[in-house]
Length: 105
Image (cartoon, rainbow, N blue to C red; front, side):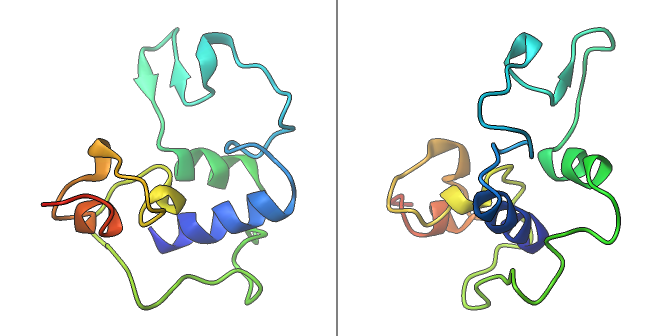
């Protein structure tokens, strides 16, 4: 969760889309996270780790996590949306802190 938050901060700073590409990039099927040939999905963080060389560019002191709020059991592909003042039903779970407090229990 924390590493994806760091990756999102780096992606935003680099002016890339959520998949680390130019914002104008078009994907067949709408996302690079689903392979229609094999019918398999990839978590966004795993996709980013595979896409960018090591050392990962977001694993520096320039990109940190908010240590006051962490949800280690939350499997959100877009952690920046947790606690963003908008209730996302997808993350309205105990593991995700009821969308970081955005949703009522």
